Length: 321
Image (cartoon, rainbow, N blue to C red; front, top):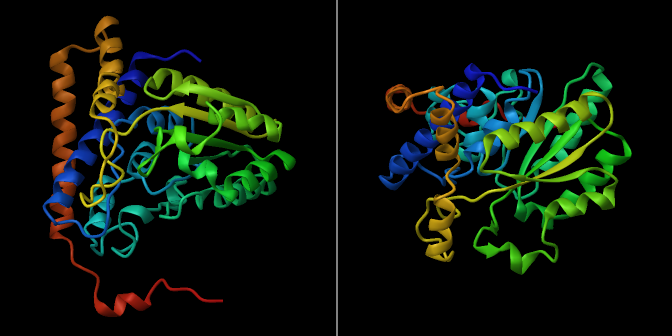
């Protein structure tokens, strides 16, 4: 599928939006303005943007604890996202969910949660629903390499293959599950090799190249829409920051490794394409960055001006069988 200039600029702007949103979120968390816990998506922007570029609004995604990038790439409102991080009533979950529980069913964002691997069975359920509904909607499940050590990963892959569900398993392999290196936790070089056990394609993708991500995801989406079943995509990428923004959790990764991956910045790589193809000038990129920063600041202002939930709100939106 050829990529036109307008779409390439759109992909770039989305990646910059995720980067600036996450940088501002980190600042606010470190300044103790944001409660709870925050997991930064900086360094992995190409995955969320490249995958969601091939989805329709009515397609569904399931996220994980490091999910702000997925929300933004699927079209979530920055103001409501920031308000949720601040615990304000105007947030997506009325301020009760926080960073790891943002959802917007209207854009097909089925939510995230803080339990490793928990989104996998939810996504399989969503894919089964899509199949029973008819039509050609697909589901994407985003998860990290650490989730592939959970039983839910294998159970979900198995069911999705048996039932030929319209789902794409998007593994963001950033080489570390919390503080544990993948080399110490997984006996295979590529997570994608595990797809063979479930009779589905397993594809390794450069997760820092948004064009490669988009291409691989588009192929998997077309396969799912056509009724051929699931695909496991493994995106090799890297988070720039520690597991969380909570500094009490040590970041034991080698500094030289972190720096090496920063040199492979996904935004820097797409900027090179934009410059080489005379699609954007550096000045135009700066203008985009300025507009994005303004949108993020507007989101912060909106959150700060929003009310906190009332005590009685704790009893609303609570369901029990």
